[in-house]
Image 1 (cartoon, helix red, strand yellow):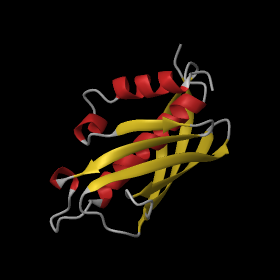
Image 2: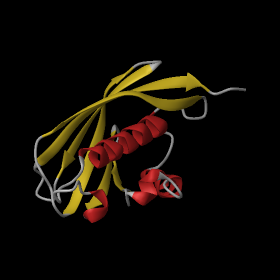
Image 3: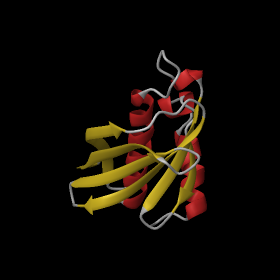
Image 4: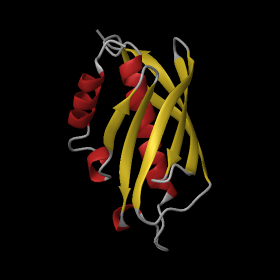
Amino acid sequence: MKYTKDEILAISKKMCKNTLMETLEIEFTEVGEDYLIARMPVTPRVHQPDGVLHGGASVALAESVGSAGAYFFLDSDKFIIRGIEIAANHVKSVRDGYVYAHASIIHKGRTTQLWQIKITNEDGELVSLVKLTTLSLPKPN
C-alpha cells in the first residue's frame, strides 16, 4: 500500500465531495492491508417506497467502496479504475441506522480485479453480498 491508512481516509473524504457518494452520505471509516470499509446512513433518502433500504443504494455503496479499494490498492498513478460488472444479492431489510460495506479483493489481476463487498447492518448481520469486477486502464499520457 503506497498510502497510509490516515491518508486513504482523508483522500476518500475529499473524493466524495460533489458526487453521488456525498449525496448518499457515504463515509469511509476503516482501512486494512487488503480491505476498505465505508458506512452509509439508512434514512428516507435511501428508502424504497415501503420504507426499507433501496437495493440500488446498497449497490451504489458497494461499487463506491470496491472502486475506491481498487484505486488505493492498485497503482493509481498509472491506471484509471472502472467498474465493469456488479451483482448483488439482498438478503435482509434495513429501515434505519447504518449499513457498513466491507470490500476485500478476491483476485488482483493486471487488468481485472474481483472484489467481494459484504454489506452488514449495525448488528453485523448480512444485508447484501456484492461481487464487483473492476478494470484497470492505462492512464493517457
